[in-house]
Length: 387
Image (cartoon, rainbow, N blue to C red; front, side, top):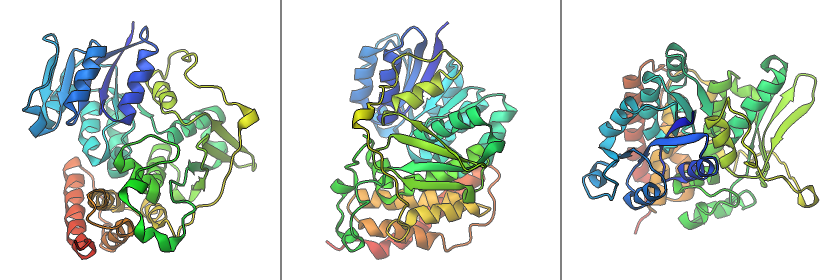
């Protein structure tokens, strides 16, 4: 029987890569539901290519508009409709490719519905790591990491056992400004920040890659997912994005996972976790043209990474505050209301508040998230670009 897959965030880069992988292996996978936020045109195009019986448009305003769907397709609308679709539709695994904190509630809903989750939404673990892991265990379901770094680490741990590992090593491309002088950061434009040199991603993740906030979030995610203290999680700059992660063994040796920068591989690895290996999903590396570079990150030019590592080492709600402040600041930068360097300044100021109280429920997590966003918006007023 084919594995029934639900894809949340089907119009983004993760969803598009998943559709590409599934289209190449239709005998093993069946898409039973998809969701998108507001790109009705792209959803209509997807429905013309795949016979998908359930679809959700989660944006409340766009969902009340028109969407061209087959008469045999059930449509769900709005945020509530998304949660209803997760609960109602029979699926073996859900790929959560929703961007940002908006993906947390759908992850929780999947676990309550006893559905395995292929998790591309790192914020679910950053904001609610312990809650997510406890719910997965209580409901007898599994989480499969989709980030290429975490998928690589999971495979390496499985091959070499956790007890033999001294530390995890996450690689980072360094983004488009890894060689840019610090005094030029204030003039960085939105267009420059979203032009990632190796990955094709949306504006939010591209900006996070440019500030290294994305790698900071991945450090927090790795600490939660694999049970390693942040002091045992290293980050190295690797601009080619060929080595996706490494593990440093207690005997001093290193093991790495290498493949071309293509998200189809980790996505299909997660969706087909216990299936035979999908042939030809990874293009073979050509060693005659392969050159790999590594360097340490510059924490002075990219303070978001050090702030995230500090948050990962603290108890309480610091990771929630970090994520919320970053989301608010990045959105303001994308809207050209603040400068590139103001992103890290706003986050730094938000983290000066006391976030040591732990969050033990979804309601409390969302309350802290809202509080951090409110403080971020207030602080951002002092950084707005005068026009």
